[in-house]
Image (cartoon, rainbow, N blue to C red; front, side, top):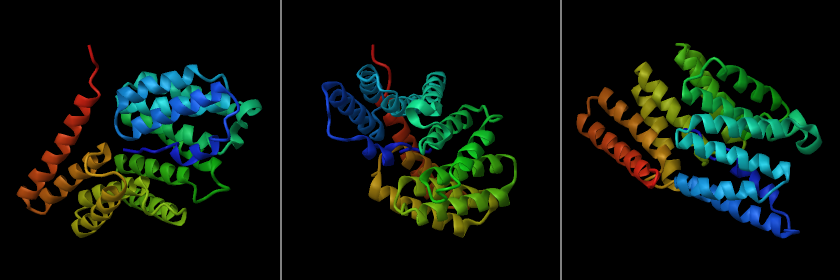
Length: 272
């Protein structure tokens, strides 16, 4: 449920193109990113593969590998996603080409890898990765990656039954995104959705409703009605409505969530 990991920093990579190789990389890479953002994962896969073959620059290649990893993760191709994220992290850890751990983009690769392990169920590595990313961002306490790390750590805490800690971490993530100028960003919607889920599980139904309503407002503005992240929020709303005794609303919300998931599964089904 965590998306748009790299896109805020891509603008830094678009100088005046000096050669054909750079022009081709820019074209394929950003078309691939656009396809991924739109949920067209098979199209994104083809474009990012072309971007990979069109650059021999390690700095640019790290961005393409991270983007390819996100796309593989969306397709539940977890082994391939891990290879991509590890490759991006290896490139960025190389001080000679990408600045090593001091690079502002290393935490993004770490968070991507942590998200993958969490989603894939390999949770023994997750907390360490999120905390390493958080530690590397000490100088930029309102970085987007700080918000991502806090959100991930909150999920880990919730799974361990540490509800109070999870709530505190999510509230910190909300503040980080707000102070970082991302009040209307999809990451804020993700945190608010997770906060709504947590409140629902605690029986704090009024708070859950408020959090999910805020997430909906952001998603309606920046994602539209048919984005995969919207399906996650709708499923959370269905659970909330069930707890409130509103079976009709719960059925409608769950049906919408299921339809979005089915549509994207059909859109990205392997052809042939």
